[in-house]
View 1 (cartoon, one colour):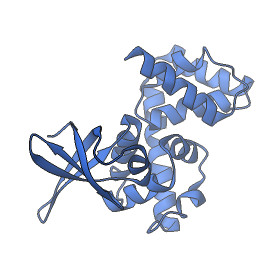
View 2 (cartoon, rainbow, N blue to C red):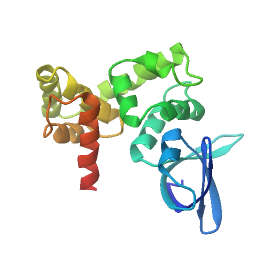
View 3 (cartoon, one colour):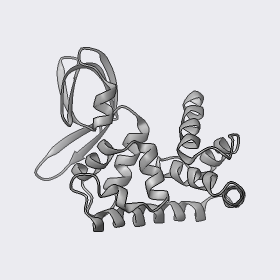
View 4 (cartoon, rainbow, N blue to C red):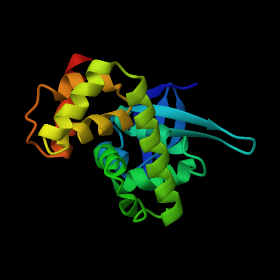
Length: 202
């Protein structure tokens, strides 16, 4: 498994970034968001995912770990392949995707190329179900915090906690960080500030 690539970006085009490492150019399928963050002839670092099928071996690369986490969540949904996942993540940030799932806004997903209503509904249903299972298996104190916070903050904190779970964090990690933020902030702002706090801990 190739976990990541660090090297010189020697070429990019729609949906593709080529990173040269030790004289070898690795072609990574990627999103519009990642392409907008990297420049040709500069050193880049991409988190990667390797897809191995009978007829193809493909490498996918992302500038942020949250984007890779969303990609993995999407392709875990039955009927959703890498192409559909990239389509969605090219149209929305990981934060917006997380909010879309948590708020059951499947219509927003149909705006992406190749995503029909049935697939969009399946994505929301399956990923929300995964969040619910993680909440049920988590520590009781954390679950109570999320529930009470959701009631007192118009649901913003509860939604933000669930959205961070979509991005790959545990409920306890998400709740611990969000509890220190202003509960009146919009969901997306809560997510962005939480991600900044978590990045500072790394």
